[in-house]
Image (tube, rainbow, N blue to C red):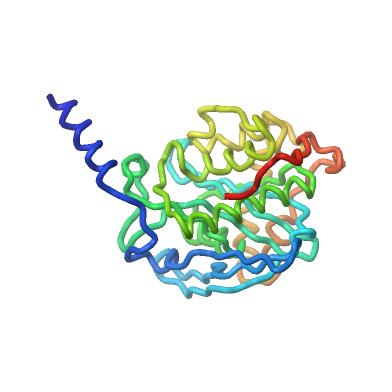
Length: 289
């Protein structure tokens, strides 16, 4: 009977709630990014978050509009932030680099209401909406490395510019789609890690295999290393610590050279990205909603 009551309560919660973009949001997630195409190569993105933090609850919010030339995107970076005493729970996100020195970070997160905090268990029962936070790297990495004092790892990913552009376009399309049609976050099926896997595999089918290591994102860098996505010649025993950037994030925290600074110690392999192992997207691939 107790099991039946639990199942009934869960079913009523699932069936009785609908996702919404109209709630009393935490100020740092009050705005949704919007993407406008200016021409086949250029986009304007509104509500890029570029906050400056004193503490995790005390910050100066800056919402900016920036333009990006998608023909200049030339690097892809994977960020992993473990946040528990045991290696398993983590947040992960992507950052896209451009040949003109710009970087755009894309972080899939729960959209917190005022006073809410993340629980993986509540994330299973439609407690949070999902949001794509488009932000300045200094915002997203400073918050995690210097304010929360979590370990932060930054990995260069093997991919050609055309592949990186297709991945970015896919994430921008989904950002706009969520502004029109909100969705609930789900710890297992609609999370930071699962969305990254879905975006990659939609463009390059089966590039990331199903694995428990995507359900436990703090292990996802080991998976990426094993399948050859991380651009490094370092052995498995040392690659991870070589990509920890907490000291660099602190050193360059208040400098305009933050993005270059946190990469100053990273040495990608000498492999020619033109011969990257990822297959070229086919003409039939769709990056729409």
